[in-house]
Amino acid sequence: MIRSIRPARGEDAPAIWRVIGPTIRAGETYALDRDMTEADALAYWLGADRETFVAEDDEGRIVGSYYLRANQAGGGAHICNCGYMTSAEAAGRGVARAMCAHSLDHARERGFRGMQFNFVVETNVRAIRLWRSFDFEIVGRLPRAFRHPTQGFVDALVMFRQLGAPEG
Amino acid sequence: MIRSIRPARGEDAPAIWRVIGPTIRAGETYALDRDMTEADALAYWLGADRETFVAEDDEGRIVGSYYLRANQAGGGAHICNCGYMTSAEAAGRGVARAMCAHSLDHARERGFRGMQFNFVVETNVRAIRLWRSFDFEIVGRLPRAFRHPTQGFVDALVMFRQLGAPEG
Image (cartoon, rainbow over all chains, first blue to last red; front, side, top):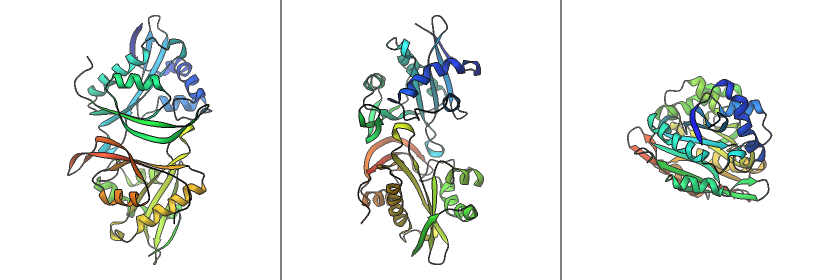
């Protein structure tokens, strides 16, 4: 059902906002200011320090977006970091899985040797299950580092995988 | 031997660069671009998203500097992050210890509930020993996430502590 995953263009901004806005406003999975403006959110998601992609469904609708960037500078620049968001309407249809596979291949093309997720909220069990299926390991646990809007203080996980052979 | 730790002022920039420049150029302990310009380094160290302090010795010389900032936005904004650098000439004289104690107290004043170091290079054993003495725990290990200029790929640690009572 994902027709293509391609680099984001400037004119995609309104469609990207329709994907990322509800997730940011919900404040349950990303450590971003829930009240950030659309302009600030798009400046973040499409920042010059990263590559941003969109996932289009069979009808050409943008149903997901992700970014890929170096997670650190200098001696840490060989490890990348990604953030993924899927529109609520498209949940459960493999969009995040397709984007993650795409990002791993793209990261290898860019020469990255590993991928790290810095802050996976422990209540985001669907995401954790998905990253695990892509061989990410939990390499860290940040105790009570996330204040969930309804569940209070919960842990955040650091997940990591080396980048070797292409995804099968 | 530390006379005071006080907020950095604009006119401290040259002295701060004398502290942080050699550490950045060495590239052994911070995941920063070793070749970054002085202007970029100072823009980073004195960024608007953080509070920056300097440590002065008995003769008023700036021998150390640190910053404190929220480590994440939104639901992660109750955890802070710090970076500390000491001039090579002042190494072993308790400057980092004094700055760490100061930062923990300041973080509590600011209402932070925890402090996290995202990327402690495993070969930086003096720093790790110091953070441990301040009750930081290793909560994560990033495999081969740092390319040390002479030791090759080494691990980086995530260290964390909750903020409770004042330092004794």
